[in-house]
Structures are given as structure tokens and as C-alpha cells.
Image 1 (cartoon, rainbow, N blue to C red):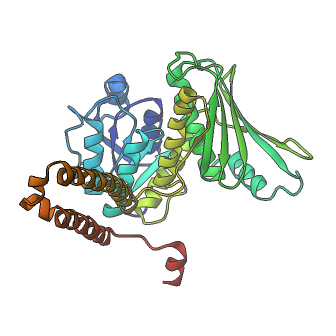
Image 2 (image 1 turned 180 degrees about the vertical axis):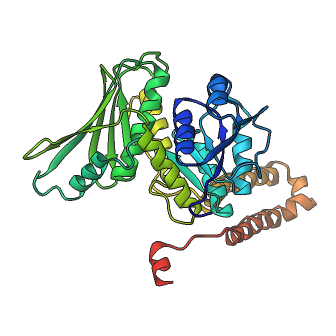
Image 3 (image 1 turned 180 degrees about the horizontal axis):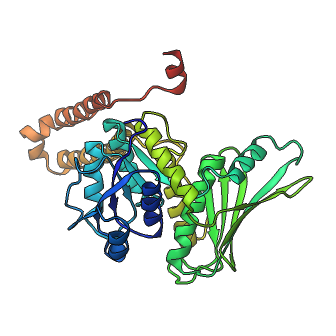
Length: 376
């Protein structure tokens, strides 16, 4: 369907999803179905006369739409519906943050099996300022050593929900621009506070950049400053999703459907969600939080389960051995029973079964490493 107009569904509705729907209409696509859009149903009906409203998330849109725009919803049915769409391979454009990190990782594992297209939408991914920042970070010769990168967000609404949403968007931009975040710490309000006006977040990337995110009261804006040895360049970023961001996200969706890789992958979006959720953990525990170092996969999950099971089995084996020794010493008549004579064989059989289960890892499909892909 390269270059063809798409029939789009709208799963949930907020300001960003509405902007995406309007951008889709300008680009020649059709918004033909909507679910869970009560907050903006009247506006949608006036802007999209061909739009059909569905009762709830359980309504399956497969065959009705070519792709769907998804925004976060409080409805409990959202996760099961998204899981079904990804299993069926329906392309999704998800407004970041679209879900919790653990569910994003689940969708990533399903996506690897089904090949479903998942594209995350957030501001500034294609802006000229982002391109200049990325180039400066990679080749900072004129600046000298970069001591710290400071992100200053100004906002009048400093409520917990508003700031966490803005922070999640900014962290996604950090991951897309500077790469993986390895650790994060936060200071300021309590994790359950209603006002987040004193929030400060420190991040460290795998490339070694130290990044500080500060929240200031003021008109809505977003600035990035490099604190370098010879200069302090400053760039202005978009503080919210704009029409340009929406059109870029739709172009990324079309590109991914046509088989080209997205600029900001879903695994990177899941990592950004993990970093965002780590902010609250850091506020609650008042310490630095280290983030995952490896991609989550079915194979790594299986290994973790086997490691946990092995520890439990070892403890159980030691406990049974102690019990049977006590049995033989203090209850000599029982030592000659069938259990007394054969319990070591029973333990050996259980251990053999556990070791045999390690062969189950062969059923998990492992992806080729980058070097192996190049050789192929």
C-alpha cells in the first residue's frame, strides 16, 4: 500500500490524537472508526462526517481500518484490545506514553513474532533543533568537553499528571537523540504529591552524557543547553505535539508499513517508558535507579525463570536432605521403609527433570546479532 491513502481508526482521544487525526485528513487519509472517544465525540463528528463510532474496546476493527491511532486510556479493556490488534498485525501509531512499560515490553515480544508495525509518536523527533543537537553531541570539537546537558521545561500546569506526561515525552526525545539511558535519579516532591513543581531529574546515557531535566514555572516552553568547556549553545524545542510532529509521525507509520525501519523503534519507546516510571521509583526510594542493560525477550525471560526455579529447587533439595537425615536418625524404623530407601532417587529424578527443561530454550527463536546479520 505504498503511497496509498489509509483508512484510520481512532482508539481513544486526547489533544494529540485529535491533532494526528486532523493531520491524517490533510494528507489525504480517512478517519473512519473511533472507539472510546467520549471526550471529543462532538468535535470528531463535525470534522469527520464519515466517522463511525464503536461502543467499546471489545469492538474489533480488523478489516474496517488499515491502521489505528492509539492514545492512553483508563479503560481496562484497552490492553486486551491492543494485544489482539498486535497479534493480528494491525499497524498502530501510539501517542507516547501509550501504556505502562511492562505492557509495552509484552507488545514488543508479540510484535517480534507477528511482524506488526508499532510506531511511537512524540514531539521533536524530526525538528532541525534535534538534528543540530545530535550533530553537536556527536562532534563537539569546537565546544570542548561537554560537562552536562540541561533540559529546561517551563509549564504553568505543574500537576502530577501533566508533568509526568511532559516528562515521559521529553525522556522519549532523550532516548531518540542520545541513546539508551543507563541510570536515573529524581529529587523534589514526594512520589504521591499533587504538585510536581520542584521536580529535577538526573540521567546518564550509555554514551556517557550527563543530562539534567529541570521544571520551571512559566509559559510553556522547552530549551536544551550544553554546558561545555568553551561555549554554552542553546536550542529551543517544541513544548508539545505540533502539526509538523503529527505529519512526521504519520509518514513514519507509512514508511514502517512499507517495510522501512522507523526512526524511533518500539523497543526504544519501551525503554523510555521504563525510564519514566523509574522517576517515581527514585522519588519513593530517594536513590539512583539503574535501568535494564539488555533487551527483554522470551529467551531472557525464560532464563530468568529457570534461574529462579534452580535456586528454589536447590533450597528444597537441601531441606529434604536434612529432613530425611533426621528421619533416619530419630525414627530408625522408618529408615527401612520404601521412602527411606528411595528418596535419593526421587531427588535425582527431580533434578534430572529440571536440567532437561533447559532444553526448552531451543524452542525460542533468537534474533541474529548485528555482526551475524551483516555476514548474511
